[in-house]
Image (cartoon, rainbow, N blue to C red):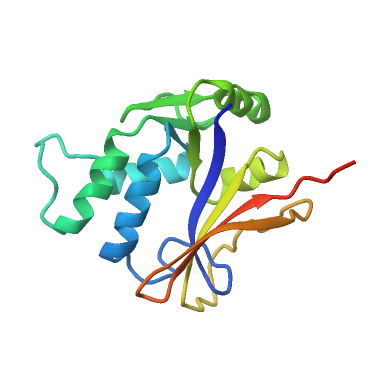
Length: 189
C-alpha cells in the first residue's frame, strides 16, 4: 500500500498561502524536487493543479521560460514529468500527465493508495484538509519558513478532530527554514 504524504510551505503563524513566505531559494527548490521525485504520483485539487500547471508546465517550445533560473529547472522538470491525479468536480478534462479523480473522495483515494508503489504526494490547502478529516494522510511534511505573515489561509483550518503527530524527521536550511516530517500516532486499544 502506498503512503500519502502531505507537503507544504508554511509560515511560523500557520499561513499556507503560496506568497506568504519568502520566495523559494536554490536549497529549498532542490529539497522539494528530491522529495517530489520520490513519489509515484502527485495528488492535487483543481486550484493547486491549475496553479502548478501555469508555473511549471514545460512550454510547447520545448525550452524553459527566460524568467526561470537554472537552479529552478530540476524542480520544474520533476513536476512536469510526474504522474498527477486531479480531484475535481468542475473540470471536464486534464492533461499534463494527469488523470481526473471523481466520485466519493475517500474510496477514490483509498484505491489510489492500494495501487503498487511507494508514495503519493499531496499539496495544496483544501484537498489535504478533506484527506486529513478522512484519516488518509500517512505523513505530514511542513517546510516552516521563518516569517510571520499575519494573513492568508492557515494550515488545515477547519479540521474536525485533533490529530496527534510524532516527529520522524527534521531538516534545517541555511535560510532558517526547517522541514519537519510527522506521522499521525495511532490510538491503541
